Image 1: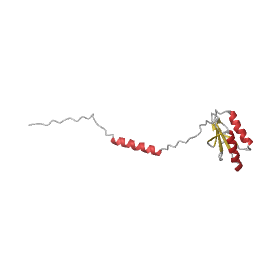
Image 2 (image 1 turned 180 degrees about the horizontal axis):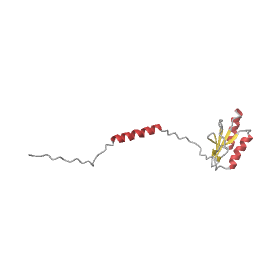
Image 3 (image 1 turned 90 degrees about the horizontal axis):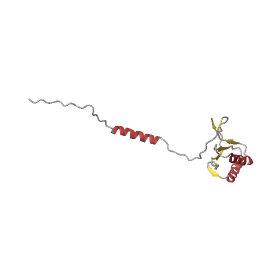
Image 4 (image 1 turned 135 degrees about the vertical axis):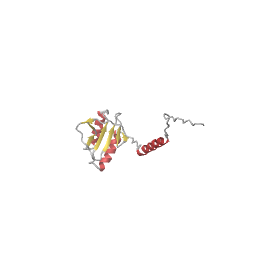
Length: 135
């Protein structure tokens, strides 16, 4: 008579099927790629000075930006002082109640800021503000 031997199963060697795991990871990756927005706005790099006594201005402003390299921009377009003077004359001939905002980098030359401020005052612009960050 022949008896069958029972073979023992080895329990230490289990394999995990990773195909469903890869599918889930791939779907999560697609979801996050589609849900995040990748819009990069080109802008002027300006680090504003900090002030304790600053107010929030809610009016529509004409923005003059002065970078740390003393490059002057008018509403995002690079300009010289002569072009700035002509543009401001035209803008304030139509609407002279509009406020003007000067966004100067904290490392910008005080002389350039004063030149722009003086140019605006000579044109008769009364509402001139300087942008700052609150502490």
